[in-house]
Image: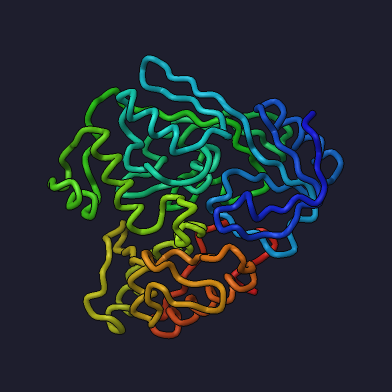
Length: 348
């Protein structure tokens, strides 16, 4: 069993560089060790926080009064038919890079996203017209309720926009490994995102060499401060802090009265998805908007940042609430946080 450490600061394990201390901290270096550690804690009634890459996470200043288990399992298996099974502790972007280099298409537009593989099905990670629900065929989990290892197929994962069964019940499943079905090809999937198509100089639906797609995505993300860089204070964030709201037909009609011609993407049943960045900027919160030691990124309106690395989670949440309340007051749309909250809540 891995060594347990008391009072470890959690801030260095998050991309926001925020968070208090863990009462107890341990690293799980294999799938078996991860299951054993969590199962023992559950038998003992000990609170558990599973810590992945820390890129989509806000931990409160009081830390976590329980056992923090950092996932550090490794291993990648590539089958001849394009199926790739990956342990939860593998670095996500390193996996994407390897797939691109080996001519496996399906995740190239998800380049540069920080974090570990085990987090990708939880959030249904997506960007630039791709999300993992398009390629995930199975997720191996430890079901803490049943006390057993299970294999869930894609349908059982309940994928939706930035959502899954894992996110709906965060305490039940520990992701152990993920299997993706990729396509052997030197070309990307059809380019589905307008901004990416413009960067590549192609039309929507065209395909480009995998490496070109990856480099274009990385360039776009760097321009928004969304590729981790210790020299760029805008990258001390949890990524996009708010999800793009999906409005039903009635709510969309109400917003049209408040903001005629507002940008939108069509969704099923007359619903529309609205860019949260547009709502934030037009509610009076521009890039670089500051509140004490935290600010909106100077490059990307959706990211709330800790530019000096010294701000508290309380400060970050105060800014998030100010932005949320300003958008709600002007547009009658309530923004919802995307990062997982530990010991804090946007509703406080």
